Amino acid sequence: MKNSLLPTRSDLVSKLPAQIEGIEKETLEEALCQIYRKAVESRGIEFQDITDAEVGVKIHMAAEWMMGNPVRSGLLFQGTIGSGKTTLMYAMYGLYKQFASPVIYTTAYDLHTQFKHQLEREASRYEEFLKAKYLFLDELGSEPERCQSYGTDYTPVQNLISFRYDRKLPTIVTTNLADDKILDRYGPRMMDRINEMFSILRFKGDSYRK
Image (cartoon, rainbow, N blue to C red; front, side):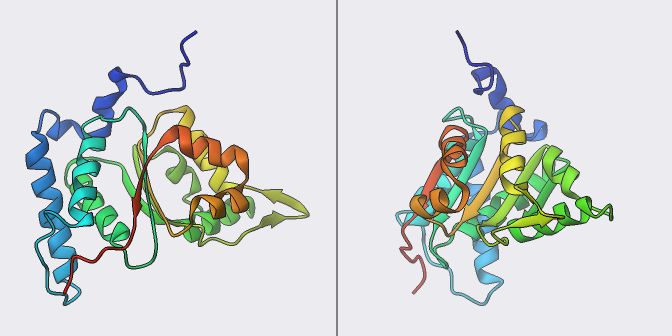
């Protein structure tokens, strides 16, 4: 029996904003490279040719994902601090913001905070995060380990991943956590969801800078 929760070829177009459907992959890669370059230079860092560097390879793989290969609704950038994963996320976010709505960027820490606001019946964006057409979630693992209210434990990150997995909503995530740390932190069910939902790009930290 076909698993209806797994994305199919008919779902692929939803990973690209309608305004740029049909774009050539090379054009998409060039756009990501240009936005990436601006992000690097805005921090006063001299930008170097990244064609053959690790980040250049990752940009190519991110473009492949955006074009629908492989057939997964999530993209996870995994690596150490300073490896370039968040800058590449920003590049993708900048591109999506030009052409699509709603596109939301947040951190795992803010996600946790917004969920707490919801529990306390205060103004909260947690539902926006759940249902955004495109969600960029930075720093998975930076949020507090426990979310508790009146003695009850909640799992806002796991709930969000499951919600978006079930609905095949494009979700781009960064984390400094290695696989074993994700397993320790979130448990085997969450690890299984991540492996099913996400294409995982592991950054080893090779520098494209002098």
